[in-house]
Image (cartoon, rainbow over all chains, first blue to last red; front, side, top):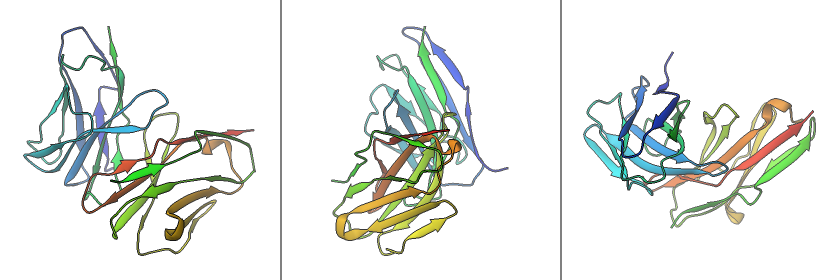
Length: 112
Length: 113
């Protein structure tokens, strides 16, 4: 079945450590997105990519980095510069920026 | 600037009641798209509907219906005969001019058996 796979489901980060969240899609979508969701809050856009080898900052990009080397993959790295990384991270993809987004199951990141 | 407002933070209804979730948007674009997504307790967002700014027809899908009114910049969502499985957070979203999607803050719906 086509869909979006995020891994891991739960992730723990130590102080000063970078961690990478995986996002893979087999929907042949051009656009991919990363969102952060804090408890009781809406979605905030971290980064998005419209095509391979291109991506743009969203509203809260500081402390995060991404790459888009393959159409299917859009990994997110939470760097040590992100001082409050504990949150629920959602990856999504769509056929284009105006189209509906399909979401993964999310990754819950916590600080040890 | 684009903005989506969902004034209802939390709603509780008793099973089988009808419930309407409000969504008010702001945009300067003449062409734009509106969406509704459902986020059940499991966390994954599920796409419900996409509507473009030129189509003001109301939409019905089973127990779900949507009322789009450009005159009031609203795109409200009604669930008829609510069920416990409808308990979730519902997000309204907006995009236009090939820009990124703006999500509203969400409305948490609890359906009590």
